Length: 221
Image 1 (cartoon, helix red, strand yellow):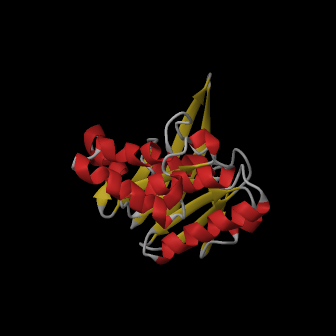
Image 2 (image 1 turned 90 degrees about the vertical axis):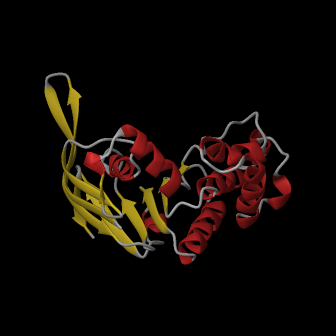
Image 3 (image 1 turned 30 degrees about the vertical axis):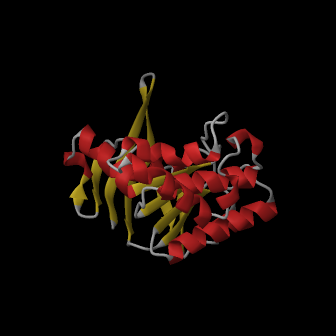
């Protein structure tokens, strides 16, 4: 469960304080499929980064599965981020000159998984996104849709409970976007919490619950 209460995020811009998030309250139960929609600069990516433990916050409280995030040290935050959260990004964030298999194996190389099991787990993740036969290709040899599937496989390989997707269809055509959303829905149906950030109302409507954010505030839910 994700529980945000009164979250404030401030960026210093010279002598001014810019409030990226203002008193955000949000609860997301396990297994939900949430869409966060808003214009560029609305605070939606900042919100996702705080949920994903990629960014700190300046006020309020955040509990993840009952753990008070503010009280955790960096080492513990890194462990939670690596084991509990998978990230899918707009630009895929793949290592282009490496193979598809290596890209998916990468998170496991920083985990406690025995090395002998890493390849099998990565191959299983790729099979789950329909890329079983693409393991030896370099990432830069794939289409945009295939690259995003690799990114999703990489997000899944550690068996996290939460998948965070920041504009996952932003570089894809309409048909491929629909396929990626369908894949994320199928992942959600297997019990994982999925949170998508998007500026596209059509993509946002795919979620079970739509949260709209503007000027750092949740304005509708």
